Length: 196
Image: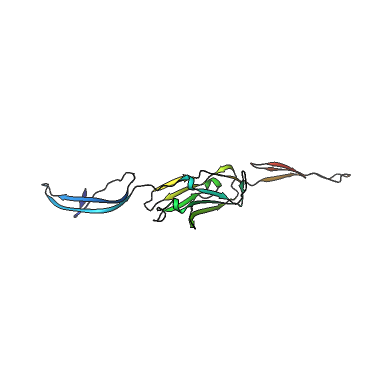
């Protein structure tokens, strides 16, 4: 403990652990002869406990639905949601939820807002040069003491956010011909040839 002008200070570094409660900090003062000249205690709130969040609680959906593998495309909306019960009481006491849509070409910290019994966040796909078989979202929960936990959804979505590039081979109709064919190539991750 050190100080001057009658004000003394002491510092302690708190190690991470499962502590989330009021702790009592006792302080005692003695003179140079070791005689006790004062004693005081102060209660302080300590939160070293990280919040809890299960990856299985995250639900991920897209605009396109159906059976089998459904590929979400440019213009479709991706929604990540989680039950409010899965993040209580951390959110109820000032915690914050954010979704990381970077695997979909989106922002890394979209706030989740409560809608009914769930918290959710959405992102609309734009051209991002992505063609992913199973894109997932990561959810971060930060409590009111700035302790955090980040988990990634167990399920993913097939995403094709790569716009095609179409090139056409022009053909000239010669005398005596009545038809002509145009052959085009759509380039990209899922390219194919078209003839008409």
